[in-house]
Every structure is written in C-alpha cells, then in structure tokens.
Picture 1 (cartoon, rainbow, N blue to C red):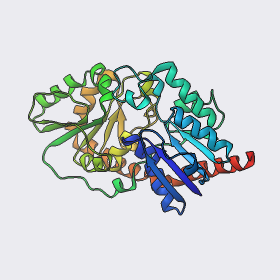
Picture 2 (picture 1 turned 90 degrees about the vertical axis):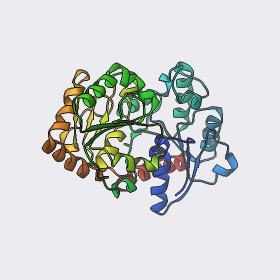
Picture 3 (picture 1 turned 45 degrees about the vertical axis):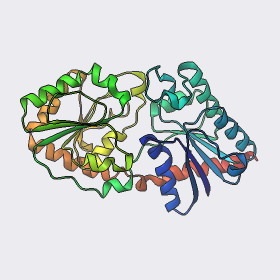
Length: 335
C-alpha cells in the first residue's frame, strides 16, 4: 500500500498513534510518508496519490476539507483519536493544539472527522463506544511501545527509585490523590528511597527528589530504566476514563513493576502484567509495600518484563495493516 500518515507536531501520543505505526508499516514493505505538523499543509494534490491517508487527531477546517475531498477522489481515510479532546479545559496545557477550542465546539469538529473517515481507530474501548454513536466502523488498536524500548537495560544504582512519568495535565491526579504528601512521607520514612518525576512536578523539598521537566519520547526508556517502581495514578474523571495503558507498558517493558489506579484501560491488568491496582486512599501503603518487600518487587518485575516484551509495536503491526487495507478496499468499493 501507499500510505500517508499525518500526525501532530510533537508529543508521545504522536509516536504511538502515527509515527511508530508509520515506521513499522514501512518496515513491512509498504510505501509510507509521515508528516508531523501543527496543521496539515501538504495539500490535496500531494495526498491524492496515496491509497490511504491516516490522520491522527487533526480536526480543524483544513483537515476536514482534505478528508472529504480525498474521500470523494477515492482515497481511503482512517481517522485516529486517542483522547477525549472535547473535555479540554480552559487551563489545559495542550489547549492551543485545538485552536483554543473546547467542549461542544471541539466535539463537533471531531464528529465531522469521524463521519468523513472510512474507518476510525482509537486505543480506548470507552472512546470507541462514544465514536460509534457517530460512525459505524470504529476499531480499537492499543498503544504498543517502540521496539527499541525492549532492547534497553535497567540502570544500576543504589537505593530504591520510585518514578512517575506524567504530563502537566496530570496535576489533577497529583492534587486529588494527595500524592505530594504521600511521596513526601515516603522520603521521610525511608532513607534509601529516591523519587523521580518526569513532567508533573511535586515540589518536594528533599535532596532525594528529582524533577525532570521534559524528556523527548525516544529517550524516555533510558530514564525509566533507572526506576525500581513506576506509578500511574489517575483520578476518576472523564478524560482519564479514556486513557490508554501505554504508561504501564513503558514501565513493564523495562522490567519495572508498576502501581496504577483502576481507571481507564487499567482495570483488568494486575500481577500477571507486573503490577497492582491501587484504590485512591491506599497509595502510601501500596508504594511502601513494594519498597520494603524486595521479593514481591522482584517477582513483579519479572512478570512485567515478560508482559512488556509482548506489547511492542513490531509484534502488533498487523493490527494497523488490517485496518488500513480494509479502508482501501472500502474506498475502492465506493468508487
């Protein structure tokens, strides 16, 4: 197939939903062109020569016009959205990515893209159910970690490192779950523990706390390799109910046991995948348990590594290939 992939201009989500699929499909012998852009500017004439165009999250007027025009010209359109973008709040750090829109206005744009596509993809069963209210063919394709993450090795260090990788939009989780207090107490009561957060800040006054403001996604695996325990806390709010399970997969593929909230796609995961689910009021006890019980942590680490290696994009490339081929066949049938 001749495949065009239009992703956003930055962010881990673009890697999962656009760039990594493009790379693995190229490796499988397809002709693939990827653009990571703020707005689709490559134009109709450039894209009409492809069999299928995968559009990730773009829902502005330019993207809508391209999708409708290309569909009329017989080009297959697959639209991917992995977030409940209509719930973007006024202070959301990525609001500008959607032209400053939120709520009903943004959802209307998304629905127009859903209707324009031959097939819609998302990593969230919750989102899939919502999208099926607008269009019939919605496929769930999970987020799969880059193959390169599986070849990385853990970093040797002294003590126990508890890590949390989360963007600024996870401040609501930090505050409502009182994680600042939880991790401050952990540092106070366990002198062999260090805490590292990537993205979200805790503001802890301790030499054993490190805040890394930003890490480019390809380098994230090396950072996680220095963790002994990874956290994935989520408060039960609408935007979190649609989140993918990629965070615990990133921990697991590096052999890092994890703790997560039973929200989003995390329910159903557990010890077999190298982690445990934690109720809102139990975070301190759950973290301390794995900090102080080395054998439990080691057993979970082995299970995490085994499961994580099964969750790489290279082992699931066919999921994307099938969707794109089905879209091409549908477009040809409509021609």
